[in-house]
Structure formats: structure tokens, C-alpha cells
Length: 286
Image 1: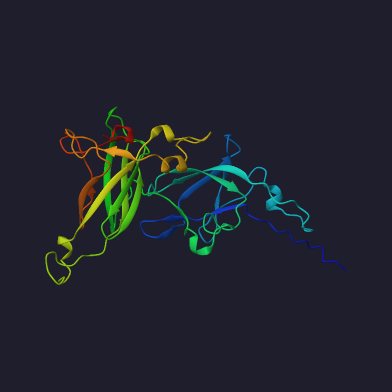
Image 2: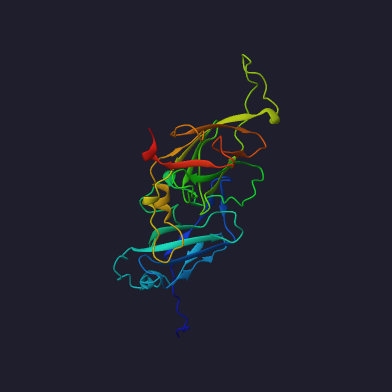
């Protein structure tokens, strides 16, 4: 006699792991993640958080056959559909972000795509630190970015830093032009001027050189239907911009500064009444 029980397999067409590059750790809580079809404003689906901190979607329009596959395996290969995904941090540690993702995605996005070998995979989808995030145990470089030609906030400009001994780090300006880049404290250096190198200098004497550049081209920004801010790809693919080290001087491609241990580095254009960093598009460079 049959027991009368049936077994049904349900697949999730999109699951995203979010990652904090500053601490190299997963962001597994207090995020609101939503998705809707690209080119439309609805229906909107909210992601649910799994026990492992993955944000997963079910009920995405057009993907029912992926979620509820037939038992006989006769279904055609799924057709990729593009969705707009928005992310908001309820604790304001990270900037909100909007990106386009094709689904279904096999594995955990963006870490396990079928065409990506394991050693080329990212640990997760990077979120950028918000100016309101506490910088506990991290180094922080901050700036208020203002477009030189208009005096308006340089919203969504990208600040790129080359930090001595630490590599390259990025931050994105919010709608006010405020930006912070957070990263681990760089390795301590030996006492300067000694040969051979002496012991490490004490923490309060540790310094590192920082070279700052901006990506700024507002014409490149694209805001998807239903979104409140530009698509992340359009933000990160802006052309190189210009910075003003001094208000009375010419624009330059970069700016040099010194990061001191235990202190936030504030990037600014000298000669201004306020602590601001003037920037503009690369078209103004001499």
C-alpha cells in the first residue's frame, strides 16, 4: 500500500552572500534585500535570510519552473532573466546599493558561478562602508567631495586609495558627497633612517603614505526603473576624474597625504574655508 506521501524539491533561483572588504568577513544580518524585474517597478520580492547568512529569493517572476522543477527532468534549460536588486543596511554600517543580476544563478552569488573557477571567485558581494560606520580597530580615510565647477556635492564619485603597505582600497560618496574608505591598519614599519632597519617604531610614530584618486563622470551614471540611486556598475565604471590639492592651483590626477596611526585621515583641498576636497571630471585636467 502506498504511504500517500509525496516529495517535492524546491530550488532557490538566487542567493547572495554579502562581504565586508574592510574586515574580510561575511555580512549576515540586518540587511534588507529586495528584487524586481529590470525595466519595471514591480512586483517586488523581499529576500529571506538563511541560517548561514545568505540572502535568498523565491517567487521571482518568470522563474517558477526553476523553483519547482518537474520530476521527469523534461524541462527546458532556464532562460536567464535580469533583475534589479537593492540592498539597505538597517544599521547604516554600509551604503545602500543597487545592482543588476541575471537569474537563475547556480550557486551562491557571486562566489560560485558555473563559469568561474574556485580560485577566481570572490568571497561575496562587497558592500562599501558608510560615513556613519564606526571605525573601531580600522584605519579610515574621509572626504567631503565637492564638484569644483558647480560647488555641488559630488554624489556617487569613487575614491580610490593606494595605501603604503596595504594595497588599493575604494569608497563611494553618498548623495551628500561624503565618503569614507576603511581598511585594516597597515603593517607597522621599522625605525626610519636606520641601516640595517631597526626595530619597529612605536605605534604613535607609525605613518603611511596614501595616494588618492577619484573616478567621477556623472554622465555615466544610470538609475534603473524603481531604484533610488544609480546602478553600482555605472558608478564603478566612471572615468578617472581630477582633484585640486590647492584651491589656487591647477587640478591634478591624484593627491598625496599621510595617514597617522590611530587618526582618521581627512583629505581636503588647501586654501578653503571649509574642509572639502574639490574634484571634477577628467576633462579639466591640463
